[in-house]
Length: 191
Image (cartoon, rainbow, N blue to C red; front, side, top):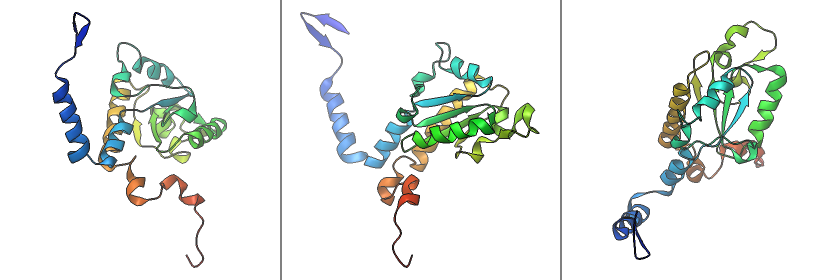
């Protein structure tokens, strides 16, 4: 940015405005815009249940900077749309996972990270282990013990591809009904 006599030059504003108008009016559909916006505004609530929590923290550290992918960790489940389950989930913790999932707004996504989340890891034959897919629908699995921050960043990119290619966030516009509310709809007689 060059500053001369109180003016700031940021580029050719007319070209940028014309491109934006063309995109909004002619080329882009509302569904694609919703999917794009959702894919690049993922706010994960993380459930640190095992050692994978260290890798989660490293993913958002300055070295790997997962925020540049459009994901920003948040602490309140009611303001997030993406759950990152980190490692082992016990029967006692499964209830907390489900409560957190229910509090998240639609559309919501989940990634299970680590060998413990996939098949129990070193606790595979334990009586008190629950697999995350038995509690919430998992969109992406990250193998490893523990998975590297690069793998976590790659899973975020894969989740973004799923959101944008399948129209996950905007599908309720075309269907007219949100999938998460189907069980609450009142059925008419004879159905």
